[in-house]
Amino acid sequence: MATNRTFTMIKPDGVENGHIGGILSMITEAGFRIVSLKLTQLTTADAQAFYAVHSARPFYGELVEFMTRGPIVAAILEKENAVEDFRTLIGSTNPADAAEGTIRKKYAKSVGENAVHGSDSDENAAIESAFHFAGREQF
Ligand code: ADP
Image (cartoon, rainbow, N blue to C red; front, side):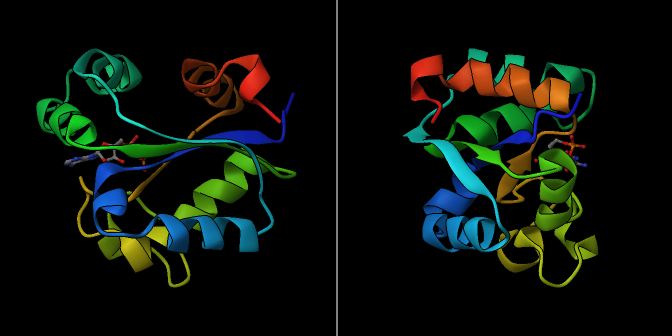
């Protein structure tokens, strides 16, 4: 059953480059309600666990290093059809392939440092949200 919620991170490159405000504006202008929001930093163990599905991929070490190098913004977002609509809003993993009007088209620099994360299923949205936010932090 669709929960109408998804989980996102503004990745370290997006934070470093001063795009927190711009990205959050695109998110709220697209009709998402912010349920939870915080600035935090992943430990190596956090990033390894978060991206465990990619542990056999050649870019895994680079990805963990990147995701831990500075603060991220973590957020839970709500909207009808949240997971799918947010994946559309962020655009393709590689910004070179991302459509006009997407967050990655505007703010991402490369396939690795691509500014934002968006959950790929309702199940993962729930797991990733619980990883970052206690129930009392979800509004
Ligand atoms: P998405 O974030 O679009 O769901 P994936 O789940 O395939 O993409 O990959 C997770 C993250 O791993 C990407 O957002 C990106 O930061 C990184 N990544 C994916 N493919 C590559 C690659 N070929 N080289 C470096 N990093 C990559």
